[in-house]
Length: 236
Image 1: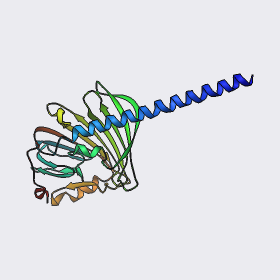
Image 2 (image 1 turned 90 degrees about the vertical axis):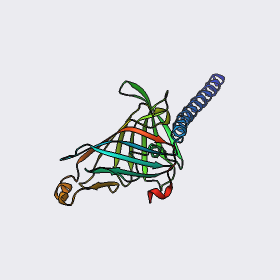
Image 3 (image 1 turned 135 degrees about the horizontal axis):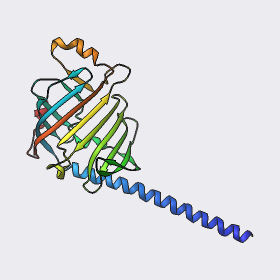
Image 4 (image 1 turned 180 degrees about the horizontal axis):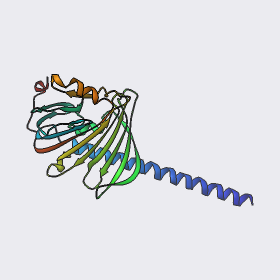
């Protein structure tokens, strides 16, 4: 009887060892996937993009406006628009795809799979290393075959939670979307610090009404000029 118990303990030990090794390998697998996606995005040193931006925030239905976006790695950007209202997070979340993957270390956790439209996506949760990062948690929905981020949900310390969905076309080889849909909600009737809003001087009353409401911004890109070179001084 003692021999049987001993053999059973040994079997359980090796079973737990196998499960632990498989779990570690799986975690390493999603980390490798995230790094591959990041490497794809890192191909882009700079770009200039043109497109249209549609803003829908609470009571405001702003007209579609033409925009021009300038980006230089790692986090320099400028968005120029022709009239209308601009509602975008500071830091260029919706124009700098590389910002969705923290660069100063993270832990990647596999969260299974889910459907984004007709595409089966791998769901990966990223926990940034250290306590100084504004991002608390990022959830990425990744098209494994094409190494593209289809959707991201990011929770921050200062700026609430943002959700982005990306549609890709002719610029997919660089990880750059043809369309970005960015949505956010405010908290306790205060706009997050990271949301910047530009109005005419007469729109103060409307701006007040928007506090505590949901917002959505859609950017549809018409063209990119990639890696043509943009001086850092241009962003000052």
